[in-house]
Length: 380
Length: 187
Image (cartoon, rainbow over all chains, first blue to last red; front, side):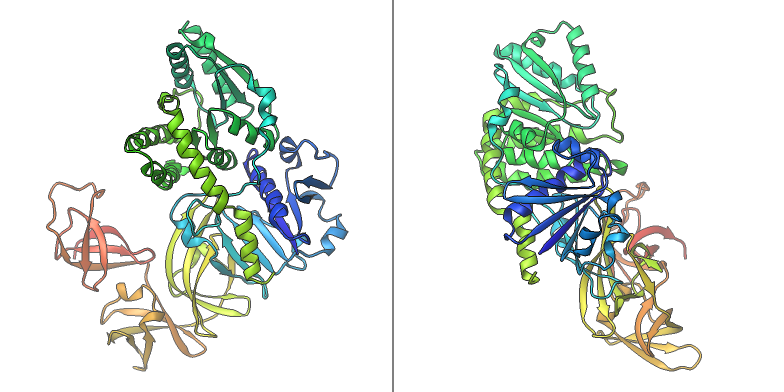
């Protein structure tokens, strides 16, 4: 079976990160004869996540655990006649990415419309819905990732990357944290952290990842340093260039608290079992709040299963998730209102809840397996 | 061509070799960069019904159809009877083929009936209809914000959420595309 994944990079790295992760997971879980091809329009974004990608190549065989993925540059498809001659059995249009016309002649017989991840209830309603299309003989189904049982599940690879990958970044501090979000003023983060560390007489290393949040995070750090606040000397700030996916995932597992964003880093944070705060992708009219509330709704039972005081903690954590996400624009000039200490003061309980959920999701909610099972029901 | 965003209850469109009529719009959901919609459709060639999902940007070939203005006469609960205003010819449509339309039509109302190969298959509704509120909890004077809603029943039997300030005997304008309250109207 040949399966093509189409990825259109809309902005930054989220799209390609998710699709590259899915490609690897499919190779890992698929039968030996499964051939996965990845059609990417933005080669340079892909290369940021996967430095082995040759910047001058139009196609490249990329090795991953369990096999190979063929990466194809969309702008070169016209020239890749041998690849075009092999018509895929399944075409996965990630997030509704349009497939280049040159790739649709002849048309693959089956399309999966891979939606964005959402915890909203509609993820179950839409998952596996068919579309009756104008092209005769072509079937399409919705495939909707989600946390709920009757969805497509979550995109991840097994096993989690070796935590040794995080060792060079670890340092000798008591805590390790990472920041990777959209534009945000992190003044509250730094102030809370300084106060917390001063009280506990502990130290922390904070990796501030390159990308949209780095400027706001570093500028707010400088402002907090100018306050001469106790505890700032206990913080080691490391502006961190981009790292490959496995290293980032290993850092999530090795660290103690993370600010994450979008989809890929959010899923990996959930699966790390570590306390985290998620900044959802900004949507018109603040619609991201709906998505955050939906996530909190599916997360809540994990707290309910714990001891009574966990529910109070859930309410406190929910407040911080909502505080980070109640925004109409992405900005790093308006101070946030989050209270980060709730994550650190309840670290042990949050990690226990997180680890238990992560283990369950890893066991039961792997999207690549669900996708392959679905294709099996279609006798592909 | 017609896009999925333009599909309405009663729209007939071609998908491959199949001819489908929209029976029910089940709402639109927004992902990160695109919206998707869920419909219930009936295959006019096989008679089967199915739920379907579409991107709002999906496009289809429209089908040339006969549309006649007819008068809704009565319903026996399972079948809806219509009469041609000019020839007085009678046509019937099963309730299940009308989708949400029974919520918004009343006896004596002129509607457009869609015919496919001589057979009536659906009703094309106006986007807005005015109906009377026949039941709701008493109105609350002074609350004109329209943000707080309460359940109500219309004279067609349709149950809808209306603002607190509306009362029994008043008329409201309803959007037939999603069945929601639009505004209070004077009759």
